[in-house]
Length: 305
Image (cartoon, rainbow, N blue to C red; front, side):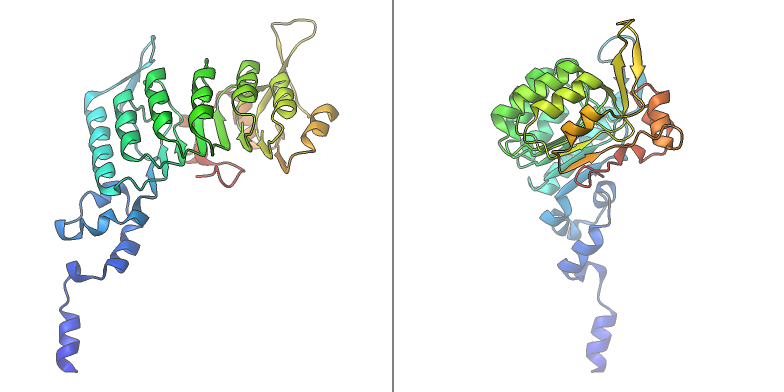
């Protein structure tokens, strides 16, 4: 008995059971996993550890520039992201199903393509910033991600190319979150390309009233719509160029939304801090001004980070 006790007492860290190590490593960030010893490296490849690759706390070091892509990312910052992506993809063994990026992490086409090719089974992508990603880059990635079900993305000026690609390649796609202005053209594109969409979140975004009505009429299979803290506007009948803030949802909108399983709203501009922030920022929320994780919040649990 004494010898057995002594043997247990002197057991080395690298001899810990793999199941115990996996539970410990599950609390680690990718940066911490990168520093484990070579003996533990095999355990680091356990698929459970890589179902979600969360880089939401990693930001690019950049400066704003007046011309597209409107940001210049410092070389050292770019190289650091590339190293992290290569390490993560090598350890994950293609098992990543959810991929999360910070809104100030600016991927290049090459970085996006590299990642897509090494996690082809991705089901959820959170990519709020596309400044450096071109049409060819995102389309190539979407063609690889045939199992994609959920996308969080910025508002873009020309959405048809993206949603056409999703419609043609991602048969299980059902959930979309837009971070930015939601115009009539955007609504028309969704109705045309993704008529079977189940969940749509437009929280903290500028929404044209007519675009909202189009969505309620055109997306027949929509079950969940979140417009909480949105900046709902319509054009003035007397001054077409002037926007009027809609303070309260009218009966027409409420009647159309009554068919949904969940219609999430908050328009308490006098008491709700988030509603006030969205209005002050005119529907394009400057997330960098607020608490670090505010941008991750969503009233739809499947979209909340």
